[in-house]
Image (tube, rainbow over all chains, first blue to last red; front, top):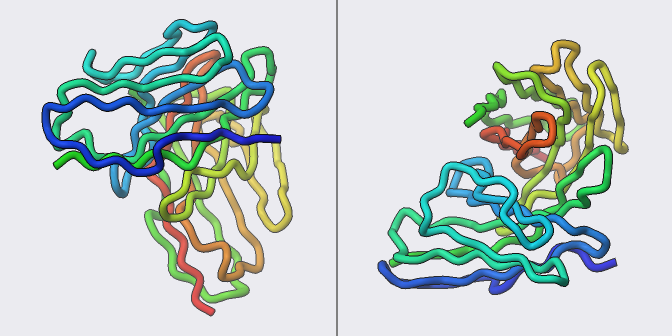
Length: 114
Length: 110
């Protein structure tokens, strides 16, 4: 049973560049949520995708956008990178039809903006 | 957004000791999840709680959903070195996103 997979594991970019991170959900899951985790902090909710649409969004600027594909995989795009965007980006998947929701996380993508 | 306060912020304990940590909020949650995160990895789900007063165990770990629904507790019995990591609570409002706490860093001294 494949868990949540994310790619790449590490990424180095410079200010102003754009980045795309990828996530494949756990087998049987249809919902993908993205989180940003700064060093020493808890994960902060960016947005959630379900049925290929953004269903909920946290307090992040429009530079952060996403997409969900028919196979439930997802991408997170960040434009015009800032130094403050350096963080661990986590993808979590869940099954919308489950009464008692659980989030399962991938290992994350460590993004460094120089 | 919602703020979840975890305490203590960090713990240094001897191997074999029991550990207690908690998570509090000003909001009422319908779901509490507890995670453990090790360096360079994503959080791993330990225990899920869905009813006020619920007590759930996973091996040496026991978690409780507070009666007020504004807090949750995690206990680890007879700690071992591999318990080292950061423990996060996460609370969910009905049908809403999960909010994470600030974490409790656990160090176990052999």
